[in-house]
Image (cartoon, rainbow, N blue to C red; front, side, top):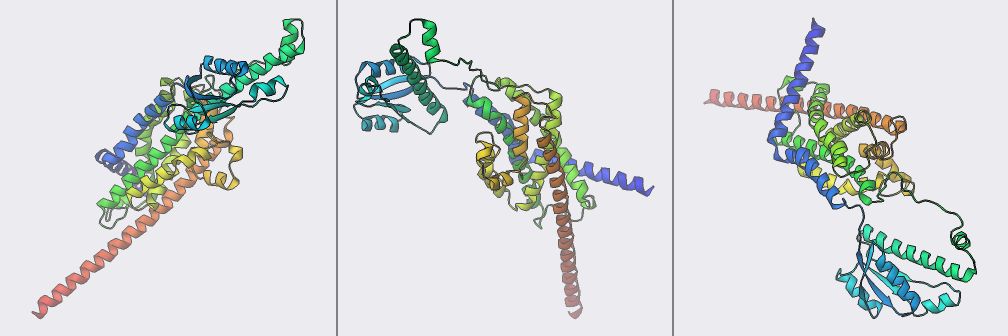
Length: 419
């Protein structure tokens, strides 16, 4: 009977802690913001900004010092492209730079005075391209347009100088190896489809850490001893029950918010979505658990709730780069790759992109899948250890308080007796 009694007592403690944590979430406006409003609104805003995937008709300024037929041909073809619009003509480079500084144009095409002369002498003609690097999409449009136009003009010059008699000979001379450019995994070639899936996973982790940290800060504020464990409540005697009860509450919330982030948002903005819901469920389960236990550990280590927000905001951008999505993983130093292994979002983002964007199966991401389970188990053990320390500290404070009150009572009785 004692075994069943202990099991019943443990279940009762887990359910009680789950209910208390749920009440704390509902009452705390900060936690509600990070658990519900931010996951709902932030992906929509971010995805809406990059919904066009690519930019068109980017305004550029031209400094044409050649004034030749070839320079005018280059400018006409650039202006006729869908990505670039020749908006201004400047007399020199300083005037063009002033237009860029006033954000009237996003780039400059500088054609030197000897451009046509060098080309006619069978030398290499150079066209300088200056781009505003504050936005990668405009840089890509300006630079790639100049590359394509110069390549096309080079083919035309080769054709005229080749002395060929048929169109077939001209085609073979200018393009001996034919190919079809078919972008895979990102048909639109846009920034949103390539980066935003990783951002969604990062939002899941960061909002969980923020919400759990703010909830822990509220618990400390309610406890006069600035401790996570209430004094005198026997249902908080088991660290396993505390971690499990809190985790059940957070899983209940993020079963909905996680579905919104990884299934609904990609469908709303037509991101590539090749995974089945069963595969996503198997992937998101260890990822969510790892993020929850990681958030618990962070909430125990950070004393004030404001510090959690500062910490999460500080590491958000580095985590996106260290995931290997927006920056090549091969170019990340080994030390920083080791640091990135501490965060569940690193492996979650890689696995989610490969599964949902590239059509990989769960066996194809077996390495990331196993690491997520290992992180979930490791952070669960660390969270239990940290909460065990909190329980010991809570008992210590309670005994000290009891001894203090007992000492004060004895002093009062001694004073009353002497009087």
